[in-house]
Amino acid sequence: MTREGSPESADGGLFGRLERRLDEPTRRRLDIHRRELRRELSRLRDRRRLLAMGLLILTFGFLAAGIVGRGEPAGADARAYWAGVRIWLNGGDPYHPTVPFLPYVYAPWMLPLFAPWALLPWDVAWFVWRGGTILALLWTIHWAYRQRPLETAIVVALLGFPFGANLDTGNINLLLTLLLWGAQFTGPVIAGLLWSIATWMKWAPLLLLPILAPRARLWGLVFLAASALLSLATLPLTILQLQALFGFGARPLRLDYLVFLWAVVPVLWRRPDPFDWLRLSWWKRAIARLRQGPQGVGLGRRMREYLGLGAEG
Image (tube, rainbow, N blue to C red):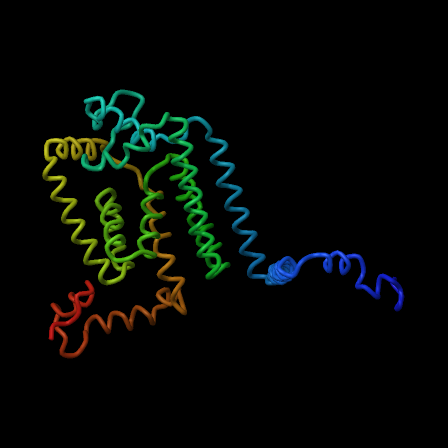
């Protein structure tokens, strides 16, 4: 123990002497880092955060084990997109490929969207596809965790299987979900464009139109109509697409589609009570409002407000 009057106590000890040798900007940065470290350490005393961290660690561990365990057979869906573009560029039919590739089943005018990625060798393309998806997914989890740590960890754990299934097969569901995330952080035009692309590819995002801002909903419907026109313009290939799409026969229950629920998180996490809709009283009030409607406001005006067109004077 250092006694009063000793050299160590007089000058603040070893760390004090070292700190005084630093210039003022460096000392200020050290003070900032110390405060940040204390704040992060204080969070470890929060039981909710500890539980959230434990859930995320377990979920990520299971996902990593599944990805590593699958190894080489993974990526069947992503390989179908990759091979479909290459077959199309070589003048072939991407909707009826030869074994071992699955058919490409999306709109023919979307083939050029995959082209820059599909020109990469498969090993590189698969690394970019899955690696980029994982990084984007981790960004969304980080954003959600900063808003509501425990709720985010619970949702990630519940959606662990859909996340893992999409990361294993390379299905585009997860990427489309991340596009819908990005749509909620952009302007109305870009948001509408991203929603229309996701909807024209899978149709499940059609139910997620309400998560967009009003004017973004309008742009989304405009771009969706443009997508329909593009499919009509490429009608011969569109017919082949429909044949390939409905030629799989009976399909099992697609639990991997549950991944689209992750796109609702930004809307819910910004609300004071994100889970009020789970209570029966919330549904009773919502049904009552739907039946009554705003007094003196017609359906046309409500639709214009829903699409961000405002009310006519």
